Length: 204
Image (cartoon, rainbow, N blue to C red; front, side, top):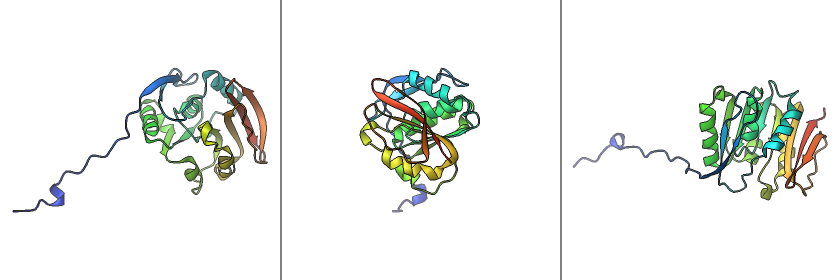
């Protein structure tokens, strides 16, 4: 009896990330993709930036955003990175460790006109920062899961990836104290009952 050759055997299907149950949604609030809904799945540590905070932040960023190269380091729902490109940034890299969240971001990017300006990287943010920089970003969003306490590890590792006069958005618990490395100067900040949000400028 002949043994079937490998060529004749069906290849196993590539496993897709498990579907994530959406528990809500956020909307992009300005620019070409205004009104686009982004699902907020039931994922540990996922906490999209509130609409009011995003509106304030992007008012602050309005003068520098056109043409900017953006890094959304803990992308989650993608609200910050997508909002930036919607409002005129040239391109954004969205780094997200969770396979289901990363796949959801790719799906959104594929259906948006101009979505090729978005690149989704599914990996651990700190591991990605430890690789050799491939480009310099003008704006970075750092809003990790609060329980992980990653700010002190992330901030020094960011510097090789940033342009000389880059901007940094940082979101932390209201009571958290983050020691900013010397190149950063506070530009604007605000608070809600739950979070402190701040925009910094890199000094040359």
